[in-house]
Length: 261
Image (cartoon, rainbow, N blue to C red; front, side, top):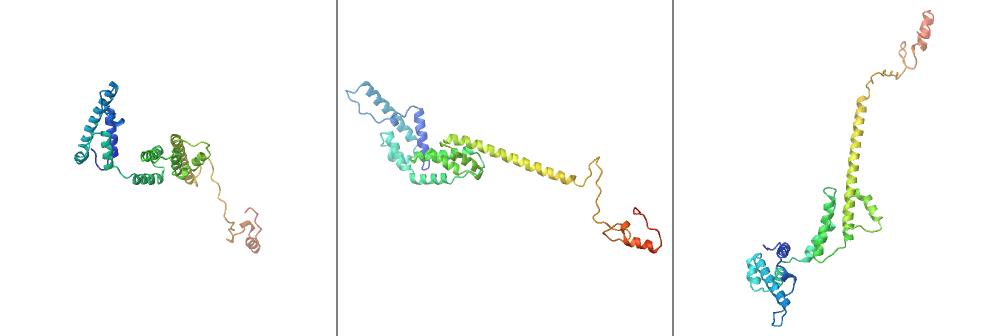
């Protein structure tokens, strides 16, 4: 049922229903001249076909519009095509406002990397189709540039490759290449994540093994941080070289000890 917000959908449904039922002859052809005695059988047949189609179209239209429109427009209508045009005047939105809304939406679109890049570009193409229906046709190449400029920095190398191409891509080519590039980027991210985890695990294992003796390998002897004499308890020399020890032996009248004692 037609209401104030669904005129376009109503018109599309009406065209689809009448076309599928083979009743839209009167909407596709102008009203033929009135039948005369001199009219040919072909002209009479065309007039009869138009009359029947027009009558059925008027019946379907009246069943799908509000009662207020039936009272003001439909009761006196004799041509289905003209009736639809009059209804459109009652419900048609301002094209300029809708064009402005669609253009703002198109120019502000940004792909964040979440979701599906194929559906994202197809949505831009869908907006282009809507604008074309409002008599504003954007070249396909313009949508390709808008889509590329809306991609995140991860696609920088991909953009450079496109700018080096001699011929511009179509939307279908852009979608195909973008899907491949997105899969490549995701693959690189997974590999990078695996390398990071593996490196972290190796560092942890190395830390655990540090300070532990490996089986079959004797432990390394720890080096003295500083030489210290066991006789005078001072650092810098060993007991065998201690001058106080040598002097002590002299005072006691004892023979000097060997260097190994």
